Length: 130
Image 1 (cartoon, rainbow, N blue to C red):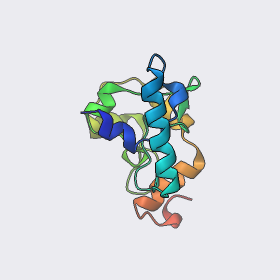
Image 2 (image 1 turned 90 degrees about the vertical axis):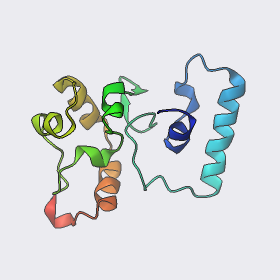
Image 3 (image 1 turned 45 degrees about the vertical axis):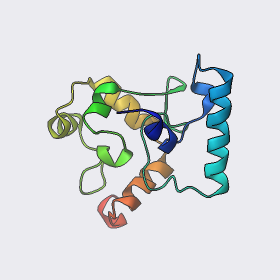
Image 4 (image 1 turned 120 degrees about the vertical axis):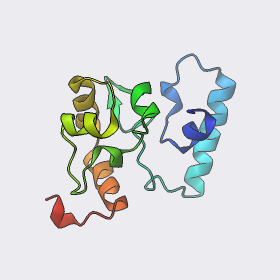
């Protein structure tokens, strides 16, 4: 479910992988460099989890409940107008057991440029969200 395939698609940084043996950290670091050299497009999916740019309390977040319900991208937090879903809309749409503090921690942690990428990837006209 959230194995190596998922991790390799994330915008991770190995400094956040506590307890991982150096050998595996080195492999993940080299793979990240390879993605950069080949201009791997992070814009296709702006993953919420294991993302070096979306930090909660100084660390990337991972909410198993969200992931199991398919909430993995910034786009999953947006309505058809490119606005963030309200907490109640998020709960109704995803049938996800979470609390409003977790939800708003994630929303407040998303940098504006990632929000713009998610909107652009969703083909949401800019006039709809200004």
